[in-house]
Image (cartoon, rainbow, N blue to C red; front, top):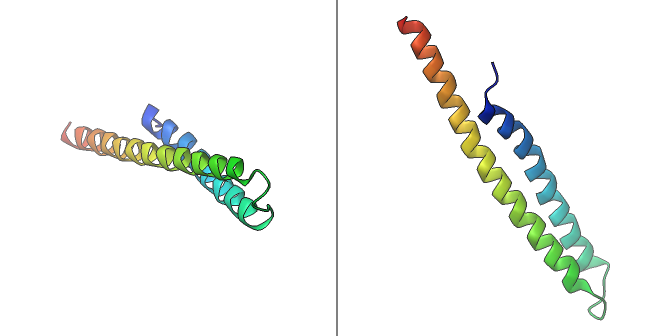
Length: 82
C-alpha cells in the first residue's frame, strides 16, 4: 500500500541525486575545460544552483520517507490492536 509520502519520496530522491551529479559534472567541466577568459562563471553558477536544489530535494525526500515509515508503523500497530 503506497501512500502519498512514499510516492513523493520515490520521485524526489532520484531527481535530487541527478541534480547533484549534474552540478558536480558542470563544476568539473568549468574547472578543467574552460579558461579564465571564457564564461566559466555561468557554469559555476549553474553547478551551484543544481547542487543546492539537489540537496533541497534530497532533504525533502528524507522527510517524506520518515513520514511514510511512520504511517506504515501506525497502520501495523492499529491492525495488531484490532
